[in-house]
Image (cartoon, one colour):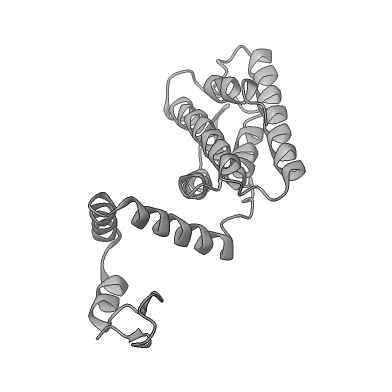
Length: 203
């Protein structure tokens, strides 16, 4: 049963509720698709304050986990012949980056995406294929992460502006290095949208 702790004399104090046993059993055993559907339905049919509480809780969870650590570049891409293809580690890194910018942790996400962009330097890939499609998705992620950064700044959640600017500078360098590298072998630069987004952003 739900456990509620409050005093009958303190009607203005919010009660502290715990997940009841049956619901906790569901949460522990439901598959990920069911959980996603339930969360989406709950957020879509609840007041905006519910979404705000949910995002705050998700952000705190990620801050306490290893999600803010930049993953290793090892295994992001595999070489087949003379061309590169996405590796399993790339999917894991993108999941991490998307989770971060999705809850408003844009700068933490940019550190992860900067590592991915930088790891493409020196690689070659076909203009049409899985690698090109994947890098186009990374490009879109960079733009989304920058938007998340803007919202993070607007919400006054950036405690170290100098560090935030350093993150952006690292991204700009990685994008520039990627541009010059692809030009050197006649490839199509894959991060055009991301470059435009950062170029016209004054932090």
